[in-house]
Image (cartoon, rainbow, N blue to C red; front, side, top):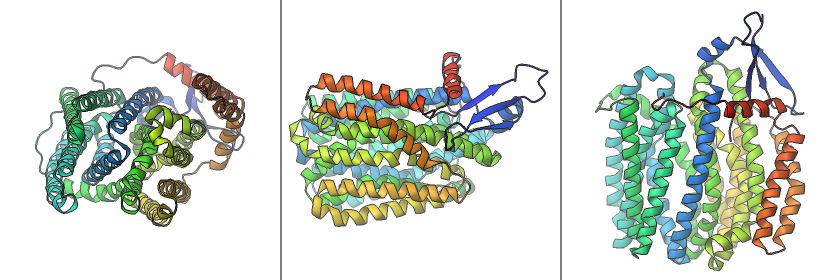
Length: 534
């Protein structure tokens, strides 16, 4: 969970001459603190950070994404077991085409809309209406081009129909995301998490029905389309009821501004997400459909965590956007705290997946997918850099440095593709996994350097070292449990693994005692929000 370690004190007493707040910062000893004198009211109104809201939003997103990720993983397990390895590889290829369409159609419009609403809430109706109007025109044009191009790419009728349905679902999801931008900009993450849960549950029910009726890939694609439509309807009703009524708005000036801001960010996001899709496409070209199926069966396991941390980064995006205009000192402190929590939580998860990769694949997919166990092990190692690196999107966007994010992602993708052409012919799906690992490592290092040159930095090596040391003893215990072959023993060892790790986190003071107490008090004393609170 991403939280900001901010503790207010001495503000209750009127006679205190210097009321201030305490921000615990990352340091080489994990105990150096920074005290910044500032009045509470001035802080609230000028910097607009509500620590209770950040905690609440993080809880909503964390719990929601945990459930969503498990449901999505279950969906892909059902599809993989319904289709054989080869057909599953072809289906994943079609999903990749639809996802590429969604990334291109998004064009960064959604995230720029979030940023603009967060900064100019008084112009909410104009911003959201103009964005929706532009999206209808742009998405319709892109969908028409895709439909015409499919005749040359996919001559088979079944595959073409499947892609059209999946692309239609992607189109609706982009439009729904623009409505969700209103909720995100107002930091109402509870509704966002609930809507996502309803969407995944509807998708699970639809896919299960399609499998029961034996309707092949077309039936599964119809389930995606139906779930996307339900998701859009819910978000539309909530935005219309609680915030604003949208209308057609043809504002060429704002459209040009939106496109100018969105293009580098949209291309950056597209290239960032294209990394995995590029692996899938190149495996299809250079290897076999079975290799594609094995690679993606492993990737779907790590994707749950990757998407979860990216969404948690989105929780902080509105706050980053405001602080970038108001105080770079607070911006840097927020980045340090967020990065620290990302690394603290991603390290044990990555090691846990690496140690139990074989057992996870067998339980989830069965013996037919045993070949993906080593792929999962390598992809799990890449999570050390993917999860903290997910902050770069919010940080660069808030700093209006979308072009740097674009350059960074283009560099990472080019490295990945180049390594794919070299390693896939030699090692098949395992080569694609190593290409991803190396590309993500370079992405994280390069991004950290770019931020350092702009005054945004953290003590990366110290945090990583302490977290890895904290994993040694519980990791040995977990590795020993895998030799028993008993899933109950491995489950018990997993619980002990997490418990011992966080005990060491506490002993190493990675999260100082004052912050633990503060966060617990925030959760305990949190008041319920109003139904349509903005």
